[in-house]
Image 1 (cartoon, rainbow, N blue to C red):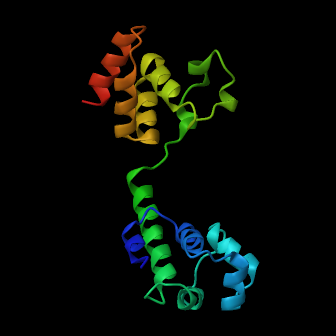
Image 2: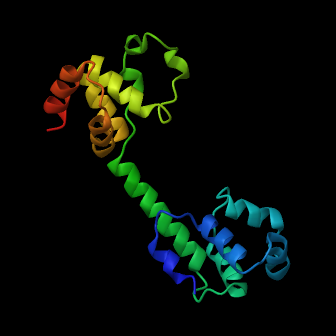
Image 3: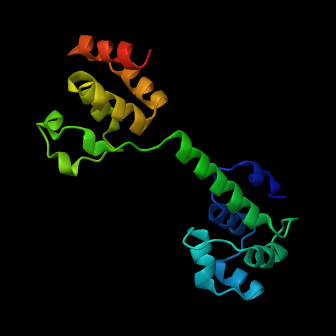
Length: 170
């Protein structure tokens, strides 16, 4: 019944367990009572603080409507492979290579690199040197940088941005 989740590698096993429990209207306490696994361990599995073992997967799968006793272990393995593959294709760059002087108008130490990525990408493409631009492309990934730069409608320093785009993204 829930085997379709095996093909979604980006979903952690704990999130699938939480979804199944919700759909089946089973509380963590009820699952604990049925399996003999302490509630805290089930909670840790759901929050991905603890990994499924083959044994834990089998015990839980026997009381839930899944056909494979290794279901949760397989989900976890698929997700691990997905995460590993993602880490190979998107290696965060050493952002310490970017000069703090680029962010002269703010405290660079408190900069949230994820929350402010559009502004950061724009700033580096307008004022950064070649190494800093390459670092940003490496950090965020080519596709995200292209999407963000193409969404910028501001004409200020547009020439500098376009020069960097032509040099590094063409």
